[in-house]
Length: 206
Image (tube, rainbow, N blue to C red; front, side):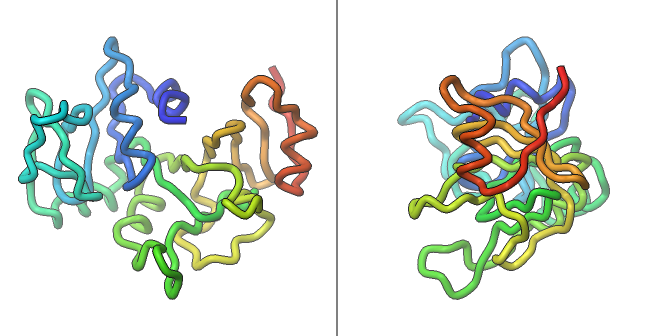
């Protein structure tokens, strides 16, 4: 999934990678393009994960994972970071999610569940402030329920903010008229995806 997301990031993009799976995208950005990675705790110019034994725990991302800093990178107060996020200065943010509705509503935090993310953090600021919000998640829960839904039942992070959803089985676009299938892994058909999600999915015209 991280490799698939990285394929769609354009040269020169300013990108925030949310905690969890989205952080893996940094390891798959093509070497022939420049992508400036931002972290909400106040880093601009992050590189890939450090090699084993080279971690600096004074240099971490918002998920408390050690990161590297590329030449020209900087770190700064998180208030300045949030001003960057809220001010529309990020081209793309990549977030995890519990649920995404077919029209792009996002639910990626919860209260009262053991092991769940206990607060929304900067996700609301990112989801609304970035020019494009992408979600990276497994299509199904461990119980086999679709995370792509008609309407979210978890607390909402943002309304109609998600433009693309990258899953382990397929990539989708969220539109005001519902989901569109961008691509799917080999062996998974359009009909399979409709059966798994219980939703009507449009085909992208090629």
